[in-house]
Structure formats: structure tokens, C-alpha cells
Length: 225
Length: 200
Image (cartoon, rainbow over all chains, first blue to last red; front, side):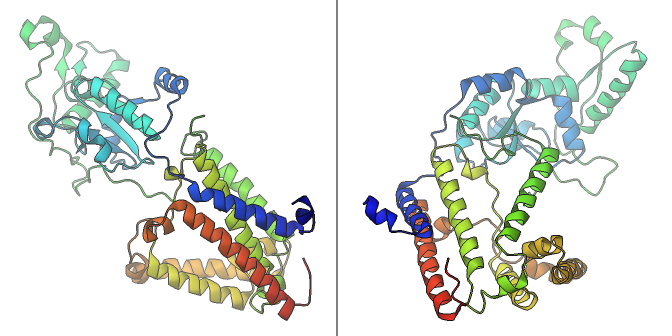
């Protein structure tokens, strides 16, 4: 064997090596199926860095800007989705997540009512090796509190005034209504935290300025090579 | 060990650093093209006269090396193949584009990458070729409204050979290796027959 090898030129040896590697690769399964190992430490680090979630005002800004480099996924039931959903969201109930044909390169933003279902879906997707999965922090509850019905300070300082103004614009853009802090505190207990009702239809998407009809940001931006 | 590649997709570096990485890879690519002799139009075109098939051998070696590397890295779990960007398949436009590139290769003596390498070493024919590329790009961009229909015709989804033919991935890998080795053997025969007898 060694004598036979020594008669070969370098090129021939390389060819033999390539054939051997190719033959072994006959058994290769390079597209990993469902068996991705989770690095618990890495996961915990990502969580503690808060790199895994998007705040409600941030998401609202993305929608206003018509950003298209992510997909917003509503994990609740179809009925709840029909009742209200964040503009641009697609409805994929938790049980159907694995069959929804999501692509692993895509940036996904998940939300549910509170936070629990998104966390569970986030873990499932992470375990499948999805690279860019984010949760809407606090889910729809936070969306309501911070974007649709933000609480405005009664005597805003000059710093607060600017942010309040932005929140007011966002709130009306999404069909909500800002609340004042005094009404919250002094009002009847029943009224606290109970906004008049969610905006009936999420069709209030198109910004008044861009009447051309901004498309909901569900399309993935094409990647160049 | 967890999947760690592709580095960009796993957020190991951002857009700016990726440009630096691309620059370094490009410099390396050009350097080795030049070192392989591909900065010379004579060397490149002689593959069409079958007397020196170095281009064919170098390119096919690169393909086999990269293919085996990617296969094994993905197999042991260091590389997530599903995150690797694939160019979408537009069969008709890509065949026409390939033919145009091939004709340009025979006529001009370079392909795009080698023309840049030749320009960098100060060859005038390489420079003219590179200017031709830019003129072609400009013309194409200006004509794009008329070409758009054809340009975007075809499926447009990224397709791979294992998917299209329903073959296991490993079988395709092995077949390509055999094709390469057979091709190298055939190339050496052709070089003996037509070439100046430059033994490798």
C-alpha cells in the first residue's frame, strides 16, 4: 500500500484523497434536520443582553417607516387575530409554527397576548436553528399600553414633551388614543388600564402623508450576493 | 459545538466589517488568480485550443475543494447550509448570460475576475477588457426597462441539483468528484495530444 502510494504523483494523491472524501460524503446529511443542539449558555447570554426582543415603540417605528426586512408573526388563534392584530402581522398559531414554511434566514418578530407564548415559540425556533428571532416585549399588552393608549404626563417637562408628542403621533397613527395620567389615577378604579376598546379594524395602516398605500411590511427584502 | 457559520448570518460581524472581509477575500482571490498565471490572456485562451487546460483544472479543483469543505463542515455541524445565500435560478436568462460571458471570454481573452487581476499587473488588454465590462454594465442598466421581462423570466427560486433531481446530497457530491477526476484525466490526455508538452 505505502509502496503503491509512493509511486503516485502529488496530483494523483490529491485525486485519490478527493475520491475518498467524496465516497464518505455519500452518507452525508449536511442539512441538519430537527436536531440542532442548543447552547444553553449562549442562549442565556442573549437573553440577558436583551438581544432577543423588540420594544413596542421600536416595532411601531418600523411599521411607520414601512421597513420590510422582517416578518411580524401573530401567534394567537385565528379568531383573536381577526379581532385585532398589529398591522402587517401574519397569523401563525403556535401549533402550526413548524409547518408554516418559515425560512431560517428571515428576521422574525413574534408576539402573543402577554409574553409567554412568544417565549415558547422563540425557544422552539431557536432549537430549530433559526438565526434571527425576536419577541415583542410584553406582547400585545405592551403594544396597547405603550403604542395604542400611552399614558401622557399631566405637566410634562420639556424633555417629556418631545417624547410625548412622538407617542401621540404613533398612537393616532395606529388608531389608538393617548390617555392622561390624572385620569388614570383619579378616575374610577374600573377605568384604570381599561381603554375604551381596541381600534376596530387594523386597516388604519396607511399613513396620512403617504396616501399611496404603504404595503404591510411582510415582504422579505431581497438579499444581494 | 453549536453552529457558528455563516459568520455574517450569526451576527459575528455587521455590514461594515463584512465589507472589510470581502475586500480581503477579493485581494486573496486576485493574488492567487495572478499566481496561477491567469493574469495572462494567452494562458486563459489556450484552454479553448486545448493545449493548456490549467484554467479548467484550477476552477474544477476549487469547486471540488469548496464542495467537500462545505459538505463536511455542514455535516459536523459547524456550518448551517440552510443559511447560506443561494443565487435564485432563472434558467433561460442564466443560459443566455453564460453564453454571452463565454463568447466574451474567447474574444477578449479574459473573464471579469481575471481582467481585473490583469489590470492590476499593468496589462493594457486587461484594462481595455475591464473598461468594456463597465461599458456593458452601463448599457445593460440603460436598456434594463426593455430587458426586464426576460431578465426576470423563469422560476426565480433558488434551486439546487439535489432538489431538482431528487438525489441525496451525498450522491451529487460523489458524482461531482468523479466528474472532476475524470475531467482532469481527460484534460491531461488532451494536453499531451495538442499541448506543447508541458508536464505537470
